[in-house]
Image 1 (cartoon, rainbow, N blue to C red):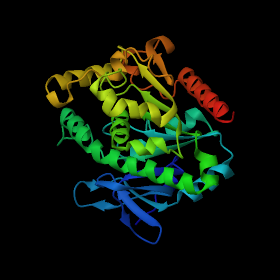
Image 2 (image 1 turned 90 degrees about the vertical axis):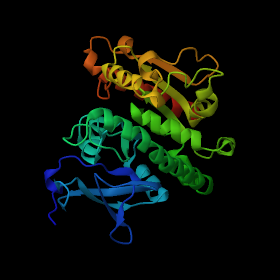
Image 3 (image 1 turned 60 degrees about the vertical axis):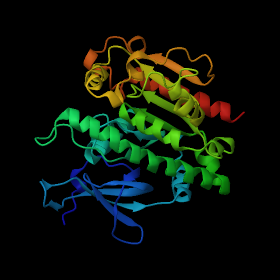
Length: 332
Protein backbone atom coordinates (compact mmCIF):
# COMPACT_ATOMS: atom_id res chain seq x y z
CA UNK A 1 0.00 0.00 0.00
CA UNK A 2 1.48 3.30 -1.06
CA UNK A 3 0.94 6.43 1.01
CA UNK A 4 0.09 9.28 -1.38
CA UNK A 5 -0.55 11.93 1.26
CA UNK A 6 2.43 13.93 0.04
CA UNK A 7 0.77 14.25 -3.35
CA UNK A 8 -2.47 15.61 -1.86
CA UNK A 9 -1.92 19.31 -1.09
CA UNK A 10 -5.04 19.72 1.01
CA UNK A 11 -6.68 17.28 3.39
CA UNK A 12 -9.28 18.10 6.03
CA UNK A 13 -8.35 18.20 9.68
CA UNK A 14 -11.72 16.75 10.68
CA UNK A 15 -14.76 15.24 8.99
CA UNK A 16 -18.03 13.54 9.88
CA UNK A 17 -18.50 10.11 8.34
CA UNK A 18 -22.07 9.30 7.36
CA UNK A 19 -20.85 6.23 5.46
CA UNK A 20 -19.99 2.83 6.89
CA UNK A 21 -16.21 2.44 7.29
CA UNK A 22 -14.15 -0.65 8.06
CA UNK A 23 -12.31 -0.84 11.37
CA UNK A 24 -8.54 -1.34 10.99
CA UNK A 25 -7.52 -0.82 14.60
CA UNK A 26 -8.69 0.39 17.99
CA UNK A 27 -9.38 3.91 16.78
CA UNK A 28 -8.67 3.81 13.04
CA UNK A 29 -11.00 3.21 10.11
CA UNK A 30 -10.84 3.02 6.33
CA UNK A 31 -13.44 4.06 3.76
CA UNK A 32 -13.68 4.72 0.04
CA UNK A 33 -15.93 6.20 -2.63
CA UNK A 34 -18.21 3.17 -2.55
CA UNK A 35 -18.70 2.86 1.23
CA UNK A 36 -22.34 2.17 2.01
CA UNK A 37 -24.81 4.11 4.15
CA UNK A 38 -24.84 3.88 7.93
CA UNK A 39 -26.92 5.07 10.88
CA UNK A 40 -23.82 5.36 13.06
CA UNK A 41 -21.83 8.55 12.36
CA UNK A 42 -18.18 9.00 13.29
CA UNK A 43 -16.09 12.11 13.88
CA UNK A 44 -12.68 11.54 12.32
CA UNK A 45 -9.29 13.23 12.00
CA UNK A 46 -5.79 12.46 10.65
CA UNK A 47 -7.34 11.66 7.28
CA UNK A 48 -4.94 10.23 4.70
CA UNK A 49 -5.61 9.36 1.10
CA UNK A 50 -4.00 6.12 -0.05
CA UNK A 51 -3.88 4.01 -3.17
CA UNK A 52 -5.75 0.74 -3.17
CA UNK A 53 -6.42 -1.58 -6.08
CA UNK A 54 -10.10 -2.04 -6.84
CA UNK A 55 -11.53 -5.18 -8.40
CA UNK A 56 -14.35 -3.08 -9.91
CA UNK A 57 -12.83 -0.17 -11.76
CA UNK A 58 -9.08 0.00 -11.31
CA UNK A 59 -8.48 2.35 -8.43
CA UNK A 60 -10.80 3.94 -5.90
CA UNK A 61 -10.77 6.97 -3.63
CA UNK A 62 -9.46 5.21 -0.55
CA UNK A 63 -8.89 6.87 2.85
CA UNK A 64 -7.82 6.00 6.37
CA UNK A 65 -8.61 8.09 9.44
CA UNK A 66 -8.62 8.18 13.23
CA UNK A 67 -11.87 8.33 15.20
CA UNK A 68 -12.10 11.07 17.84
CA UNK A 69 -14.58 11.93 20.58
CA UNK A 70 -16.53 15.18 20.96
CA UNK A 71 -14.40 15.93 24.03
CA UNK A 72 -11.14 15.59 22.09
CA UNK A 73 -12.57 17.61 19.22
CA UNK A 74 -13.61 20.46 21.54
CA UNK A 75 -10.15 20.46 23.15
CA UNK A 76 -8.55 20.75 19.71
CA UNK A 77 -10.88 23.59 18.74
CA UNK A 78 -9.89 25.49 21.88
CA UNK A 79 -6.23 24.83 21.10
CA UNK A 80 -6.61 26.14 17.56
CA UNK A 81 -8.02 29.40 18.95
CA UNK A 82 -10.56 29.64 16.14
CA UNK A 83 -13.76 31.67 16.20
CA UNK A 84 -16.13 29.27 14.43
CA UNK A 85 -16.67 25.66 13.35
CA UNK A 86 -18.61 25.20 10.12
CA UNK A 87 -20.08 21.77 9.33
CA UNK A 88 -20.42 21.48 5.56
CA UNK A 89 -23.17 19.34 4.00
CA UNK A 90 -22.43 18.96 0.30
CA UNK A 91 -24.87 18.47 -2.56
CA UNK A 92 -25.47 15.41 -4.72
CA UNK A 93 -22.92 13.38 -6.62
CA UNK A 94 -19.96 14.44 -4.47
CA UNK A 95 -17.56 11.62 -3.71
CA UNK A 96 -14.80 11.90 -1.05
CA UNK A 97 -12.16 13.48 -3.30
CA UNK A 98 -14.44 16.34 -4.32
CA UNK A 99 -15.79 16.71 -0.76
CA UNK A 100 -12.31 17.04 0.70
CA UNK A 101 -10.35 19.00 -1.87
CA UNK A 102 -12.36 19.75 -5.00
CA UNK A 103 -14.12 22.85 -6.26
CA UNK A 104 -17.06 23.60 -3.93
CA UNK A 105 -15.47 21.17 -1.47
CA UNK A 106 -14.03 21.48 2.00
CA UNK A 107 -10.72 23.00 1.00
CA UNK A 108 -12.43 25.52 -1.28
CA UNK A 109 -14.43 26.66 1.74
CA UNK A 110 -11.44 26.47 4.11
CA UNK A 111 -9.30 28.67 1.91
CA UNK A 112 -12.16 31.12 1.48
CA UNK A 113 -13.05 31.45 5.17
CA UNK A 114 -9.48 31.48 6.49
CA UNK A 115 -7.88 30.18 9.65
CA UNK A 116 -10.47 31.58 12.06
CA UNK A 117 -13.11 29.12 10.78
CA UNK A 118 -12.65 25.34 10.89
CA UNK A 119 -14.57 23.62 8.09
CA UNK A 120 -15.74 20.07 8.90
CA UNK A 121 -17.30 18.28 5.90
CA UNK A 122 -19.89 15.53 6.12
CA UNK A 123 -19.16 12.55 3.87
CA UNK A 124 -22.43 10.91 2.82
CA UNK A 125 -22.83 8.23 0.13
CA UNK A 126 -23.35 9.57 -3.39
CA UNK A 127 -23.24 8.18 -6.89
CA UNK A 128 -21.04 9.82 -9.54
CA UNK A 129 -22.98 11.97 -11.99
CA UNK A 130 -20.73 11.50 -15.01
CA UNK A 131 -19.94 7.85 -15.55
CA UNK A 132 -20.35 5.61 -18.54
CA UNK A 133 -22.69 3.40 -16.47
CA UNK A 134 -24.77 6.05 -14.76
CA UNK A 135 -26.56 8.92 -16.46
CA UNK A 136 -26.87 12.13 -14.51
CA UNK A 137 -30.62 12.01 -13.98
CA UNK A 138 -30.41 8.51 -12.51
CA UNK A 139 -27.60 9.64 -10.22
CA UNK A 140 -29.72 12.55 -9.01
CA UNK A 141 -32.70 10.33 -8.20
CA UNK A 142 -30.55 7.71 -6.49
CA UNK A 143 -28.95 10.33 -4.25
CA UNK A 144 -32.42 11.68 -3.42
CA UNK A 145 -33.22 8.30 -1.92
CA UNK A 146 -29.77 7.71 -0.38
CA UNK A 147 -29.89 11.00 1.51
CA UNK A 148 -32.57 9.58 3.81
CA UNK A 149 -30.06 7.22 5.39
CA UNK A 150 -27.48 10.00 5.54
CA UNK A 151 -30.00 12.14 7.44
CA UNK A 152 -30.41 9.32 9.96
CA UNK A 153 -26.68 9.37 10.63
CA UNK A 154 -26.69 13.15 10.94
CA UNK A 155 -29.66 13.01 13.33
CA UNK A 156 -27.70 10.61 15.52
CA UNK A 157 -24.64 12.86 15.34
CA UNK A 158 -26.59 15.92 16.50
CA UNK A 159 -28.37 13.91 19.22
CA UNK A 160 -25.08 12.48 20.50
CA UNK A 161 -23.47 15.93 20.50
CA UNK A 162 -26.46 17.31 22.41
CA UNK A 163 -26.09 14.59 25.06
CA UNK A 164 -22.37 15.27 25.35
CA UNK A 165 -22.98 19.01 25.80
CA UNK A 166 -25.51 18.25 28.54
CA UNK A 167 -22.88 16.26 30.47
CA UNK A 168 -19.69 18.16 29.67
CA UNK A 169 -19.71 21.93 30.17
CA UNK A 170 -16.35 22.49 28.39
CA UNK A 171 -17.73 20.87 25.23
CA UNK A 172 -20.95 22.91 25.47
CA UNK A 173 -19.08 26.16 26.11
CA UNK A 174 -16.74 25.53 23.17
CA UNK A 175 -19.19 24.35 20.51
CA UNK A 176 -22.62 25.79 21.38
CA UNK A 177 -23.61 28.66 19.03
CA UNK A 178 -20.07 28.68 17.57
CA UNK A 179 -20.77 25.60 15.46
CA UNK A 180 -22.64 26.43 12.26
CA UNK A 181 -24.31 24.18 9.69
CA UNK A 182 -23.67 25.11 6.05
CA UNK A 183 -25.87 23.15 3.64
CA UNK A 184 -25.70 23.44 -0.13
CA UNK A 185 -28.17 22.21 -2.76
CA UNK A 186 -29.16 18.61 -1.96
CA UNK A 187 -27.21 18.91 1.28
CA UNK A 188 -30.14 21.02 2.49
CA UNK A 189 -32.40 18.03 1.80
CA UNK A 190 -30.22 15.91 4.07
CA UNK A 191 -30.56 18.53 6.81
CA UNK A 192 -34.34 18.90 6.39
CA UNK A 193 -34.79 15.12 6.55
CA UNK A 194 -32.58 15.06 9.64
CA UNK A 195 -34.67 17.78 11.34
CA UNK A 196 -37.84 15.81 10.66
CA UNK A 197 -36.36 12.82 12.49
CA UNK A 198 -35.56 14.81 15.63
CA UNK A 199 -38.22 14.33 18.29
CA UNK A 200 -40.07 17.26 19.85
CA UNK A 201 -38.48 16.63 23.24
CA UNK A 202 -35.06 17.30 21.67
CA UNK A 203 -36.03 20.93 21.07
CA UNK A 204 -37.50 21.32 24.56
CA UNK A 205 -34.24 20.41 26.31
CA UNK A 206 -31.55 21.42 23.83
CA UNK A 207 -28.08 21.56 25.31
CA UNK A 208 -26.55 22.12 21.88
CA UNK A 209 -27.78 24.52 19.24
CA UNK A 210 -26.19 25.59 15.97
CA UNK A 211 -25.29 29.24 15.64
CA UNK A 212 -26.12 29.81 11.96
CA UNK A 213 -27.88 27.26 9.77
CA UNK A 214 -27.32 28.16 6.11
CA UNK A 215 -29.50 26.86 3.30
CA UNK A 216 -27.56 27.86 0.20
CA UNK A 217 -29.41 27.30 -3.10
CA UNK A 218 -31.42 24.54 -1.51
CA UNK A 219 -32.83 21.59 -3.42
CA UNK A 220 -35.87 21.35 -1.11
CA UNK A 221 -39.53 22.31 -1.45
CA UNK A 222 -40.23 26.04 -1.55
CA UNK A 223 -43.11 25.53 0.92
CA UNK A 224 -40.73 24.45 3.66
CA UNK A 225 -41.01 27.65 5.72
CA UNK A 226 -44.53 28.75 4.77
CA UNK A 227 -46.87 28.97 7.74
CA UNK A 228 -49.58 26.26 7.82
CA UNK A 229 -48.02 24.33 4.93
CA UNK A 230 -47.57 20.59 5.38
CA UNK A 231 -43.78 20.76 4.93
CA UNK A 232 -43.57 23.49 7.59
CA UNK A 233 -45.56 21.51 10.13
CA UNK A 234 -43.57 18.37 9.42
CA UNK A 235 -40.06 19.72 8.85
CA UNK A 236 -39.71 23.50 8.50
CA UNK A 237 -40.76 24.34 12.05
CA UNK A 238 -37.96 22.06 13.29
CA UNK A 239 -35.43 23.51 10.85
CA UNK A 240 -36.16 26.97 12.25
CA UNK A 241 -35.29 25.70 15.73
CA UNK A 242 -31.99 24.07 14.77
CA UNK A 243 -30.04 27.33 14.79
CA UNK A 244 -30.11 30.70 16.43
CA UNK A 245 -30.21 32.14 12.91
CA UNK A 246 -31.29 30.47 9.66
CA UNK A 247 -30.07 31.92 6.36
CA UNK A 248 -31.75 31.14 3.03
CA UNK A 249 -30.29 32.14 -0.34
CA UNK A 250 -32.24 31.91 -3.59
CA UNK A 251 -32.32 33.24 -7.13
CA UNK A 252 -34.24 32.49 -10.30
CA UNK A 253 -30.89 32.66 -12.11
CA UNK A 254 -29.79 29.34 -10.63
CA UNK A 255 -29.29 27.22 -13.75
CA UNK A 256 -28.52 24.03 -11.83
CA UNK A 257 -31.84 24.14 -10.00
CA UNK A 258 -33.56 24.94 -13.29
CA UNK A 259 -32.10 21.67 -14.57
CA UNK A 260 -33.38 19.72 -11.55
CA UNK A 261 -36.79 21.34 -12.05
CA UNK A 262 -36.89 19.81 -15.54
CA UNK A 263 -36.01 16.43 -14.04
CA UNK A 264 -38.76 16.77 -11.46
CA UNK A 265 -41.43 17.17 -14.13
CA UNK A 266 -40.77 13.57 -15.04
CA UNK A 267 -40.48 12.34 -11.44
CA UNK A 268 -43.66 12.95 -9.47
CA UNK A 269 -42.17 12.02 -6.07
CA UNK A 270 -39.93 15.10 -6.31
CA UNK A 271 -42.28 17.45 -8.13
CA UNK A 272 -41.93 20.56 -5.95
CA UNK A 273 -40.45 23.96 -6.75
CA UNK A 274 -37.00 24.44 -5.23
CA UNK A 275 -36.52 26.82 -2.31
CA UNK A 276 -33.18 27.91 -3.76
CA UNK A 277 -34.80 28.99 -7.03
CA UNK A 278 -38.07 30.70 -6.03
CA UNK A 279 -37.47 31.58 -2.36
CA UNK A 280 -39.61 30.80 0.70
CA UNK A 281 -42.29 33.47 0.37
CA UNK A 282 -43.64 35.10 3.55
CA UNK A 283 -41.61 34.14 6.63
CA UNK A 284 -42.86 36.92 8.95
CA UNK A 285 -44.04 34.26 11.43
CA UNK A 286 -40.39 33.35 12.08
CA UNK A 287 -38.07 35.81 13.82
CA UNK A 288 -34.76 34.11 13.07
CA UNK A 289 -34.88 33.75 9.27
CA UNK A 290 -32.68 35.91 7.05
CA UNK A 291 -33.32 35.88 3.29
CA UNK A 292 -30.82 36.78 0.58
CA UNK A 293 -31.65 37.04 -3.12
CA UNK A 294 -28.30 35.95 -4.54
CA UNK A 295 -28.79 37.90 -7.79
CA UNK A 296 -29.10 41.11 -5.73
CA UNK A 297 -26.44 40.23 -3.17
CA UNK A 298 -23.96 39.07 -5.81
CA UNK A 299 -24.64 41.03 -9.03
CA UNK A 300 -22.59 40.41 -12.13
CA UNK A 301 -22.15 36.65 -11.92
CA UNK A 302 -22.86 34.41 -14.89
CA UNK A 303 -26.06 32.35 -14.62
CA UNK A 304 -23.98 29.20 -14.45
CA UNK A 305 -22.30 30.60 -11.33
CA UNK A 306 -25.42 31.24 -9.24
CA UNK A 307 -25.71 27.74 -7.86
CA UNK A 308 -22.31 27.65 -6.17
CA UNK A 309 -20.79 30.87 -4.86
CA UNK A 310 -19.02 29.47 -1.80
CA UNK A 311 -15.83 31.41 -2.45
CA UNK A 312 -17.36 34.76 -3.48
CA UNK A 313 -15.82 37.30 -1.10
CA UNK A 314 -19.09 39.25 -0.91
CA UNK A 315 -20.99 36.21 0.32
CA UNK A 316 -18.22 35.23 2.73
CA UNK A 317 -18.35 38.73 4.26
CA UNK A 318 -22.10 38.31 4.83
CA UNK A 319 -21.65 34.89 6.40
CA UNK A 320 -18.84 35.98 8.71
CA UNK A 321 -20.91 38.93 9.85
CA UNK A 322 -23.79 36.57 10.66
CA UNK A 323 -21.38 34.39 12.65
CA UNK A 324 -20.16 37.41 14.62
CA UNK A 325 -23.68 38.60 15.42
CA UNK A 326 -24.73 35.17 16.68
CA UNK A 327 -21.62 34.87 18.87
CA UNK A 328 -22.18 38.34 20.27
CA UNK A 329 -25.84 37.71 21.06
CA UNK A 330 -25.08 34.38 22.76
CA UNK A 331 -22.66 36.12 25.16
CA UNK A 332 -25.25 38.57 26.46
